[in-house]
Image (cartoon, rainbow, N blue to C red):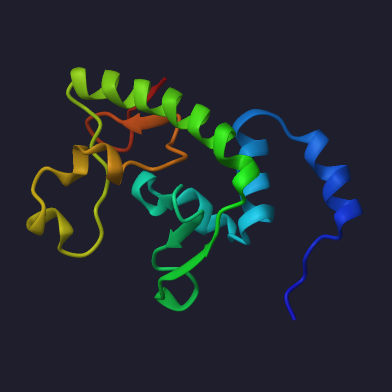
Length: 137
């Protein structure tokens, strides 16, 4: 049996987290995502029309579809507007590429820089000329 928080426990936890972390927690709770699934979520995997999220390579390396809590829609859209602005700036500076799984980089040569393939919750910094040098945004 999976261990989940009660409604009262969630009401105690949510006010204690702020900003993007709170959005992640709400997404975990409202859509039943695991932490690794949330941090690997890509922009194109959120379907606003059908109010669903496609989880890629989840538990057991299987894909699945889960519900998207509609109340989070404006919060997520606002977050993604900010992420898109950062992504556009990164592209202008010669960055903005993400890792593509399997052979997708060969199948779609420019996809690593396209908006749909970007992570919903990107890292705050990225490697510059190797893992020993990091740039903080």
